[in-house]
Image (spheres, rainbow, N blue to C red):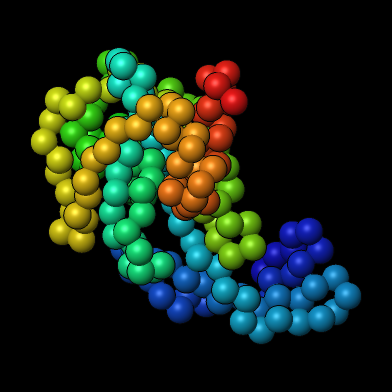
Amino acid sequence: MGTQGGWKTLASRYIVQSPYLRLRSDSIELPGGYRIEEYYVRESRGFAIIFALTPEENVVLVRQYRHGIGQTMLELPAGMIEPDEEPAVCAARELAEETGYVGEAPEPQHAATFVSDATGSTSRFHLYLVRDARPLLAQRLDAAEDISVELATLPELRRFVQDGTIDAGYSVAAVYFMLDRLGLL
């Protein structure tokens, strides 16, 4: 089927194919001949994460329940990229839907792209900066979303990632990256 990095894929089959999850089971042969019969890979189009700054330089955050971990979490707004959707379009859409905030520029500014879980997923997350974000729209939440919007000053945001108030890995990475990019570390 194919060889990458010395790992040979002998067979693949899909265990789950739904709008929310696509899980593949691969049979792998490693360079030394060792075989793994069930190496699971979650396939994904990835997601966009948004670092939105208001004119007052507050950062837009969302607080929502995350069923996988069973906790309510404080995070940067983020969402899955839809089929045939560009990451920048996803970023603008998710910011508006989850928070009602819209940036002044017509399109969010791409800051970076990161691999989210190289061991078990094809997913990448695309980080976008939105400046002059203002609450111009009503939230348009999905049926499974219950999101409250919060604002944090840049010093509060730094404290939130340092003390674990914000502890989702992608949000922590995005916050530190953006604070560095903005010269605030």
